[in-house]
Length: 219
Image (cartoon, helix red, strand yellow):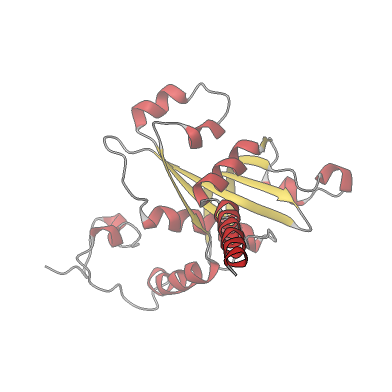
């Protein structure tokens, strides 16, 4: 009886270790995706239009930089810093990268509006036919002075492993993003007035905030 219990305990311990090791942190997974990607001059459109099975090289990750993406459904456009994409059964986005360059201090946690921005780029890719079911969003913060010294480096992948940067990773959540967009669209397209708030961070994404005048603020 003791021997059977001992063997069962050892087996359960090994199983727990295997499960822990198999669930690598998101940051580690995202860094590996970025570092293993192959830089390319292709645009998103060119990647989607690859027609020969040989040229698609299924499973190979391509690092696409400075790409303009557009959402027809929500009527916005933007320029993403970088994305890692590949051809699986369909074109797939594994990672969307957004870089931010604060002047004096690196944040201790990622700003939600930065993840929101990266999510918008992923949603725009999704609308073009790219699979984003397992897409990760990576936000890299680096001080401006430090970033200037890195501008001559040939590879942008090194940003993710640089000791001077802070990196945060989250999963792309399409449903959550679209719920937020639905609320914002009501304001942006004048279906309802903005709601008063004392939160300064909410003003950054308010269309009235850019004009410097707000008739809905609480005083």
